[in-house]
Image 1 (cartoon, rainbow, N blue to C red):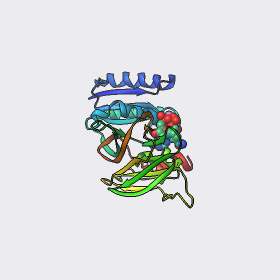
Image 2 (image 1 turned 120 degrees about the horizontal axis):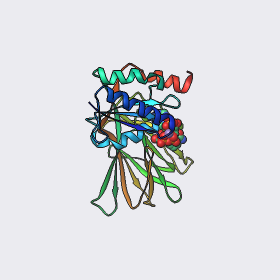
Image 3 (image 1 turned 90 degrees about the vertical axis):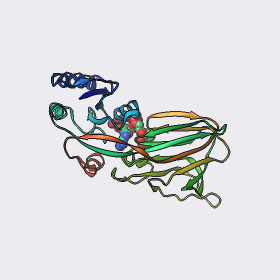
Image 4 (image 1 turned 60 degrees about the horizontal axis):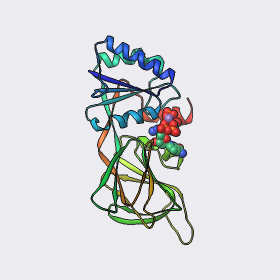
Length: 264
Ligand code: NAP
Ligand code: MN
């Protein structure tokens, strides 16, 4: 088996990374950071987001596992004290794989032809560069609303505990192949109206955003933020691809939610 390890880059994570690497090499596993079968992320959820994007072209061949060196994470759920146990599990046992849904984002431009496609593990957000953000929102080919406000956030189920949660979105179990649309400070008065509630869309109900006037936007894909000019539309849907996590023990999602947000 070939493995790779990504570290957050702080000294604690780096030390742990080097330790795990030498243990795994002792077990005759092969270090291969180009084509790994398993990627171990040491740091926080942000470190796993980074690892996901680094290996997003081979999601069907790579499984991820996260070790947290800070607070409990949603993607990083092993503690440093457990790494010997984790290393033995990786080296000796065939692991189970759990798959989580991803968000597909396709940006199309006014000059036609060209389009860009992204995959997000947490979410994609869209905000204006100049002035108020105004977009026509279409769901499954039908006009739904004209949104005015700060922006919109489309999240995956596993991303629903991140930015989406801060926007008042619901927490979705990652076994649901769905995406969630959450508003950022919509303008609502007698003239302008939006639904006001987060919406959960099933797979293949695409959400399409079409600019009304200003065509330049700041679009984020997880931690990545890019300026897009002359945008014609932005399409969001549940991706065909999934992320695969290597599971060596049960750690139910609702327990992680409880331990992170309610009490330890
Ligand atoms: P960051 O600023 O370090 O991340 C913000 C926080 O979100 C960190 O505590 C991070 O955990 C946590 N986080 C990431 N994914 C999560 C998940 N799926 N569930 C629960 N918490 C999660 O930046 P980053 O580490 O590069 O992460 C980028 C993410 O930050 C974005 O995808 C977005 O979800 C989030 N964000 C949130 C807000 C907000 O809540 N208002 C605003 C902007 C961005 P770690 O410390 O373990 O990395
Ligand atoms: Mn972070």
